[in-house]
Length: 348
Ligand code: EPU
Image 1 (cartoon, helix red, strand yellow):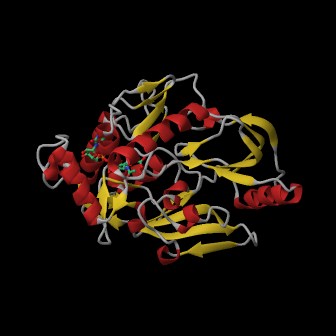
Image 2 (cartoon, helix red, strand yellow):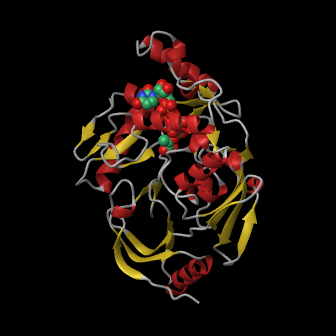
Image 3 (tube, rainbow, N blue to C red):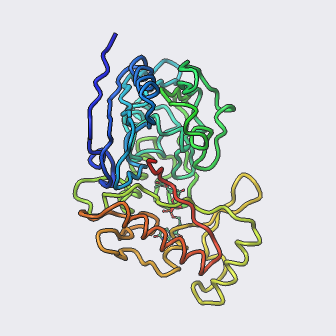
C-alpha cells in the first residue's frame, strides 16, 4: 500500500513545454496503477476535479492554474517482448520507445522520432508525423475507467482513431490511459511516405537513417525541443490542419491564384485524406494571412522556423498566447473562410 503524497500549489509552467500558466491547487505524481486509482478516489471524495498531466508538451495551462488535483503520470515500465511487441507505461518518454524499437530493427516508429512528451499521450491525440500515425501500430491501450475505477484493455477498433483524434480526446473524462502496447515489425522496412522525407533520404534507408533524417527535418522546423533553440517554448503545431470539402479547397486555390499568392493552383498545399476530404496546410494559411514566421506580439510569437507553432519567448502569459491565437484564427477565417482548430489541450 502506497501513501498518497498530495502537494499543494505546485507550479505547472515548468512541467510544460510552453512554460506558461499558474499552479495546481493539488498535485500528485503517480508511478503505479494503484496510486492512480487512489488519487482519483481522493479527488472524488474531496469533490474536486482531477486532470491528467503527462509530458506537458501539448498542454496549455491557464494563468489562474487548476482548481483541482493534477495527476502527473509517471508509470515507467517498458518492455520489449519477443516478436515485436512493446509495452510501455503512460509515463515513459516517447523517444525512449522509438529509440528501443529502432535499435532492435523493429519498424513502425522510426518516423515518429523527435516528438516530445510521453507514451500515454500518443493514443490520445493519435500522434502522427511524416506520413505515419501511431494508431497504425497500436495493439492495445490499457485504460482506467474513471466511472468505475476498473482497468480495461481497448483494441484499436474501440479507440475511435482519426486525424489527431480518438475516443480519449473526444471524451477526456471517461478514461485515463495507463499503458500502451505496440505491435511493430521486426526486420520490417521503414516507412518513407512523406514527400519531404523522400526527397531527403537515401534509397533503401535503414530505420536508423529514416529516424535520423526525420530528426534533421524536425530540427530545421524547431520541432525538436532543444535547449539552445529560441523557438523551443512551444506546443508543436498550435492548430490542426483543416480538413475541408474538395470544392472549398478548389475555391481557396482559385483565390490564391487571383490574389497572386501563388502562380499556379497546385502550389497551394493540399493532401488527400481517408475520406473524400482534403487536408490543407494550416502553416501556409497562417503565413498567407499575413503572419510571417517570426511575427511577434510581445512575449508570444509565430515560430521563426514554422508558422504553425506559437512560441513563448519568456515572461508572457497564457492570456497573451490565447489572444494571439484568436487573432490568427479570426484573420485566417476572414481571409480564406477556413476555421482553424486549436491542437494542444487547454487545462480547464
Ligand atoms: N507550410 C508553410 N509555412 C510554414 C510551414 C508549413 O507554408 O511555415 C506549408 C508548406 O507548404 C509545407 C506544408 O505547410 O509543405 C506542410 O508543412 P509540414 O511538412 O511542416 O507539416 P505540417 O502540416 O505543418 C504536420 C503535423 C506535424 C508533423 C508534420 C510532419 C499537424 C497539425 N501537424 O505539420 O505535427 O510533424 O506534419 O508530418 O498535423 C504536431 O502535431 O505538433 C506536429 C509537429
